[in-house]
Length: 323
Image (tube, rainbow, N blue to C red; front, top):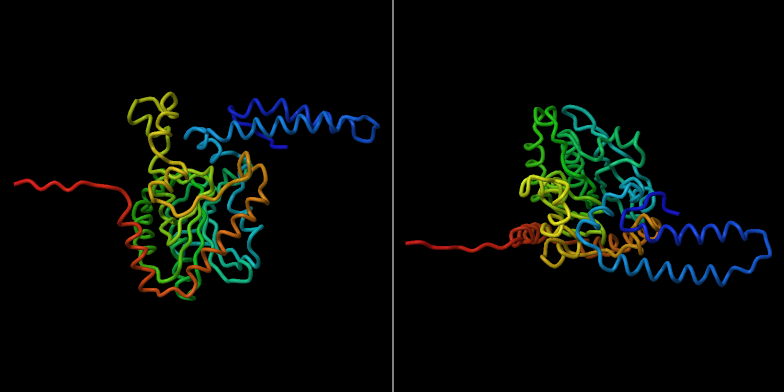
């Protein structure tokens, strides 16, 4: 069973507890409760489908941040073999908020780069809750340059509230590090696939997110600002206005696919990826292999032109000529 429930999942808790109690109580006994359990499981499935078929932007934001949601390290262990983690930016130090290195996906060599939030409080604190410092982005850039040199594709996994906004990060050139990554990724002569697995926050996400293919898990988010931050700016109250802001920001995978910002929405198991992480990993593997195959052997000049056009056509504007 899931360890942590969100507020809107509370109706499911009683049913799941009742099913678990019946199973545990009848184990090893001659009690005929199979029909009762089956009825409750069918009722639970209907209720879960009802709840998850009509989620708001804020509810999807909560799922994207769920403490049990699979992190980059889980997918690396499940999907890839021969992973060799590489450390350090060769300028200042290593940043645990960015994990990266070389690996194989179904026997194909790739370079992996991802945000890592941590799976418990101790690791979360160690990894700064997935908020990188400048050295994290410079480490990512070093790995991207290696991938380009060896002509291997790059797979990035986004899961961050944003770049760390502390004084030390600013002193060491946070904005410049992000800008360098954006410029470099626009010109890298190797395929890049980006996957948003949880929370995609602002330039901290985009710094490893300029891909030829951008995929999002169904209950992940991607936005220039958090709902709380947006509400605090617009209505001076980050808590009361966050649900409204989440809808206005159009930060869900479905919204962004409709707007042409991403290329594919990957459906999650009912209730979210944390309900069945292994099934989610299987779906990711299929999608990654499919997109890698499509990008394999691509003309690099053509690839760069397509990447340029991909980001140039995002958004809408009106030109007004005044005399």
